[in-house]
Amino acid sequence: MAIFLLVRHGQNDMVGKKLAGRLPDVHLNDRGRAQARRLAAELAELPITAVISSPLERAQETAEPIARIHNLPVAVNEGLIEIDYGTWQGRSFKQLRRLTLWKQVREQPSTFRFPEGESFAEAQTRIAQTLEDTSKTFAHKDMVVCVSHCDVIRLAAAWFLAMPLDAFQRLHVSTASVTVLNLHDGKAALGAINAGFGVPRLFE
Image 1 (cartoon, helix red, strand yellow):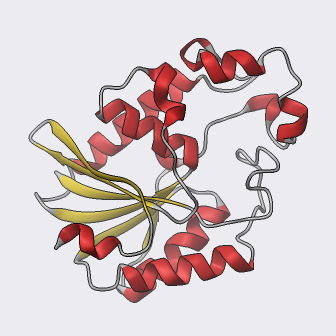
Image 2 (cartoon, helix red, strand yellow; image 1 turned 180 degrees about the vertical axis):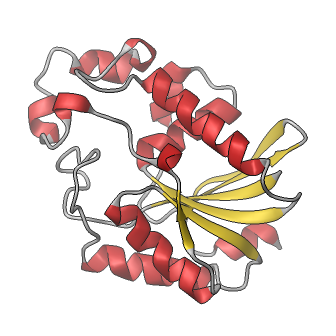
């Protein structure tokens, strides 16, 4: 069972503007690359055992500096991938907010499935199962970095906090932030949500 550092990827040009989803070739911008380097430096003194990433480029680019400083490879796990937003992928938030369905997304996400895509409930089950299965492959107190995406990390945090799915969007997860999740003996403890730089102090 492991301690997971759930890292949201760094900034890219679509953050806050468009729903990037699983689009290919969405890369970190200059700010995102700087965030990734700074986060790697912040985590340098922690005894990180493994670095695992979503298969999407922006996540792997965030994971690489962390892995490099610890002389580790970046392992890719499909279970950490962004939600499948279906036909909404690539659309601007300005467009999406005009849709009748937007109210359901915001107020009743537990009942919502993205057109031709995944439901929030399916995505939450996926990420929770991925973390539980992955944890079983590590020893107690092994520290594992998992680089993923905003909604995926919020869904995971809500699951392990036993929060109602309809409340998960109350959690905030910034780019290049760390959410600390400790899984041990079938129990979960959330050590931090949306921690910024200064993460090592969480373990002092």
